[in-house]
Length: 342
Image 1 (cartoon, rainbow, N blue to C red):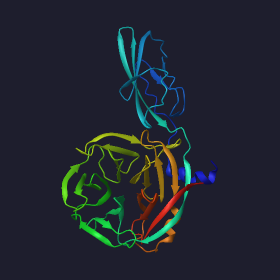
Image 2: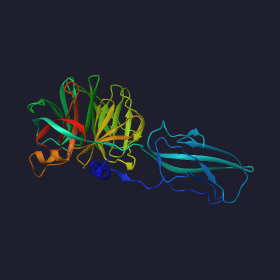
Image 3: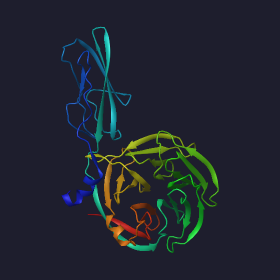
Image 4: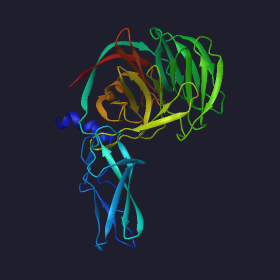
């Protein structure tokens, strides 16, 4: 990949330069050696134990995130990001547990995508767009800001609001997704989400967050809900009880991608807006690896420039048209685009 295609990756990534500190035992000097400066998906660990005092070690066992592994484990079926490595070392009649943090990076360089504008539609310039999604051909939008947050059904061709409800003033609206006629809407720092009947907008229930303390973006694959919290993590939610069951961490081969915001499920991948970056990353939901990057920065120059204008946010896939609709916070236009590799 040439440098001009790679600039957005360099801009979005937070670079990490090591695999965690060597936490040598103060008493024995024992420590876990990774024998490498960085670890990529698919690499073999090649673990050894540093034993400066020449202790009579009789047994060593390893665990990665609590699961037993051998010293030559191949990291080919795991998620990316920070992992906890543990070694239990037996010597003489004693046992010592050593720990080390390692970071697993993706093993591919992301593809770089540009876009072609297919159509341009009007968009409410007062909408601080947080979530955008098509369901049964209808466009739904969630907007933010305290005392201004809304849930809407919108005619995407005219910009007319078909249905609207205002959130309570104490809530800052965030992402939305629709699954089985249930519309799920997040709030930002209130640690609460709402579930509505998609046809009536009648609120059915309220749910609380788990380990993810903030609500940013949300999408679904028809079975599972995926939720971002403004970090590099994407959380998996059971749509029946709305509990967090797992998470992935989003990484390139260089580092993590923080500030994940609005999410959209498209053809088996998660597309995620990066807050303040006017770009979208394409994520493998099985391991968190970034497989592509879309540079939408030129779109901001095509909307009316005003003092409330903010960043790109809002990405919705239209499965029948096989196009992507994107807009931004307080943008007066909604763009229908097709993406293409550069």
